[in-house]
Amino acid sequence: MSTEIMHELTVIEKTQETSDTATFTLQIPADKKTLFYYKPGQFLTVFMTIDNKSVARSYSFSSCPMGDPHLSITVKRVPGGIGSNYLLDHVHSGGKLLVSPPAGHFFNMGQSAEDELEYYLFAAGSGVTPLFSVIKWTLPSLPKHKIHLIYSNKTHDSTIFLNSLKDLEKKYPQLKVTYFYSQLEEPHQRLTADNLKQILSEAFSTPTKKSFYLCGPEAYMQTIENELNTHDVDPAWVHKESFFAPEGQGEGFKSKAQEKGIYIETLPDGFKPEACEQITADIDGETIVVDLKNETEESILETLLDAGHTPPFSCMSGSCQVCMCTLIEGEVFQENEGVLTQEDIDDKKFLACQAKAVSKKLKIVFDED
Image 1 (cartoon, rainbow, N blue to C red):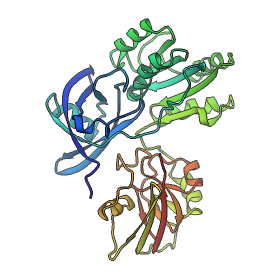
Image 2 (cartoon, rainbow, N blue to C red):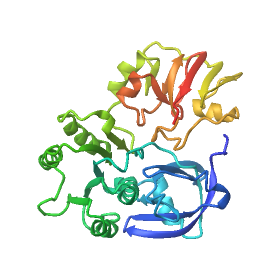
Image 3 (cartoon, one colour):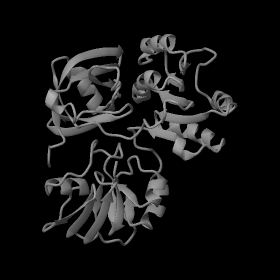
Image 4 (cartoon, rainbow, N blue to C red):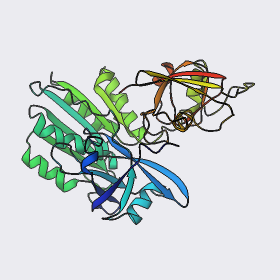
């Protein structure tokens, strides 16, 4: 597989944020500054070799491209998590990381500084990481914009960036942070349906235009999105970020996906996959054709990379949308739905890193930035 996307960076500082979370600050060589230009809310993918196996995991930037001199990612330990445990236990200051350039389209930087806008940012646990980057960029860049961060954690001690957020609140009056704790008996101990309704009712009591950003476990974000739907919020103003594949969606996806030539997790009864002989792909407006002489078990993304082409990709695990494609002709089998939504399926979209061609000819278009 091509490794052009992989670049070695040095960890110049490792900062312990909480008992299970650390920030890794990375040195960008002068000749790669342009390549690693990033926007608030983006992420990079770390490529690791653990127990002789290749592992790729995506982590959000906690640094701000305008205010922080170096690029930083923040990693929280996941019980049983291969990547996070390896980074937290074995990578320290002076260590090296093999990473991809920045990717992701979470935050819209196109708002005018003259407009008045309110951001409602909902974060759970380490979901605060990309939002922390967004906050640090927005406060000085768009001073007329108000930010409401609704931040859920287990306890005070597990709250990532707690002191930094308090300092930002003191410095910028347009920032308001509301904390919820699931393991503390306080008035705001947990973000419940009732206090979520109250927060949004207060939000919509003013005519100011509002934008909503959600980052956390899928169930957490879905609860908030459901409540936003009761207020008829335009979906274009709701943005979600998650590196966790949605759970429990497989059956609902299969019936609708099969009508589109995209099969999720299982193939239809009686369906006989064909060995793909040709893949035609549109990448950044350029049409490339790959002829396959032998049957392959590789994903569509890996097949294109092996042929020497440069399709967009990042996480390689179905956790982001960088390799999203639209199916034009043929049929594909995607082993894991990853971050696909039913709306994506309806639009004939799939993830090239998780999908294999199951028809003789396949024609696809990679989504443009």
